[in-house]
Length: 207
Image 1 (cartoon, rainbow, N blue to C red):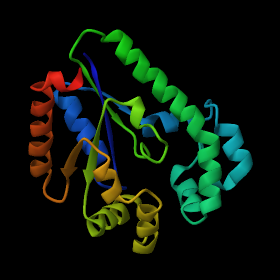
Image 2 (cartoon, helix red, strand yellow):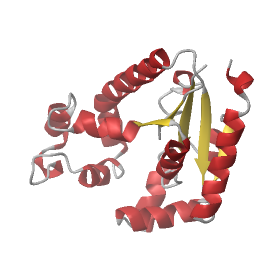
Image 3 (cartoon, rainbow, N blue to C red):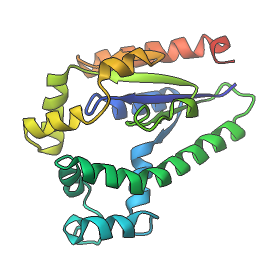
């Protein structure tokens, strides 16, 4: 049977890197962040409502929504974050579920794997949308350093973004698999390859 593996974890824990590695090993891949970009694009279903709610300051020179600018707003204002989620999440979840359903229909009877990166999997109650959950975890200080490097935000802002999600300890307790990403990229690759081997050699687990 095909397997849908949901990948989640904390901010800047390495979820996208794990997704890419699984793709290189043979998994089909899907990213909720990519779907969010579609939903927020100028032709997307949430564009106009988000623009009306947050104003022209969130639009770049090409007319597209400036995601870093929007992120700065919503991580400083809990109500703004809830409002953005209210507008965008139904569209994102609808498209995500449709693509997962299409995978299951297309690969019925096979041992294909779809790895789906869903940062807010638990926050949005999407556990039952996937067959198994992998949590990618890292120490908070390392997450904050990665986020400040990647996004150019200060440490306080990085910690606010980390704290906006369900604690990683709770996600780990609710998951089927955990990969710690506190070391080198080579170390992470070995862990991902080990997980892939486990999945490939335990098909009965998914029936």
